[in-house]
Amino acid sequence: MQTLHFTKMHGLGNDYIYFNVIDHPLPNPNALSVTLSDRHKGIGGDGIVLIGKSSAGDFSMRIFNADGSEAKMCGNASRCIGKYLYEKGLTDKKSIRLETLSGIKTLNLHVDESNKVDTVDVDMGEGKLLNLPNGTIERDTVTAFGQKFTATAIDMGNPHLVLFVNNAETIDIANIGASLETNPKFPGGINVEFVQVIDRNHIRMRVWERGSGITKACGTGACASAVACAMANLTEPEKCIVQMDGGNLKIMYSTYTKQVKMSGTANTVFEGEVTINA
Image 1 (spheres, one colour):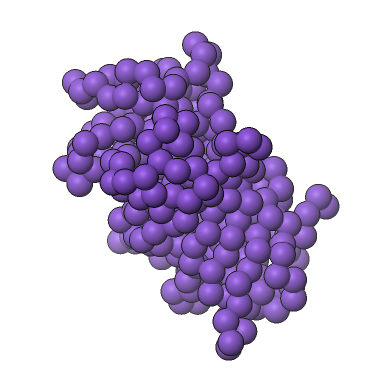
Image 2 (cartoon, rainbow, N blue to C red):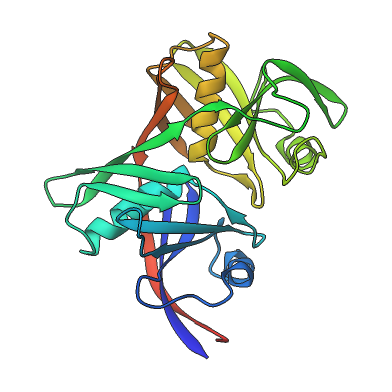
């Protein structure tokens, strides 16, 4: 048996269980994520996040979804890691290079008068069309669960399919999202965003996350949605507010460099210990 300390954190309701593995590895994180993410029999969350050493950056992140699959990147989790590292005294840097499976991401921390991290800006890298076996999808028709949608597939280090909808509040996220996540067109699965354009600087987005299902927010999904809207000239690329079930993110996209920056909050919920079979 092994007792592990954890921190429960969330970015706009996208909640994960965080473990410091800088000095001690975590055994079998895939299975552990399934067990601990259960909201009735475990701690509850969208998955687990491991904060570790890095030879390429300052620290590293590994993230496992609620179904045990490993994700390449999570924008909301990266902001939480910035807060975790700074407030626990693991770094005094306010600009942190975080190694992920989709490359190095730079976290810029904004600290309040009580020396607590208020918001975090993340350089999310390049937002571009997703390369698929049959080519790219840009403003193309996609059919799911008997309905047709205009869609754009975006690569944000992980795959996203942005569906443009008239009303994000009434859309059948569960059935449509699940059917598209496992569609053979998208080998390895895909995240699905349902996007309603409110005005040139404001969109409403709801999300079905690959491996986790419906979540309150998705940082890379917000970036993908803003990029898809900017590509279609539906919004202003340099400032797009993405409203999700858990709150808002500010997304800035450069049409010249294709670089995406995200800004938002991070929150600690509670800390605790859990005993596992080592």
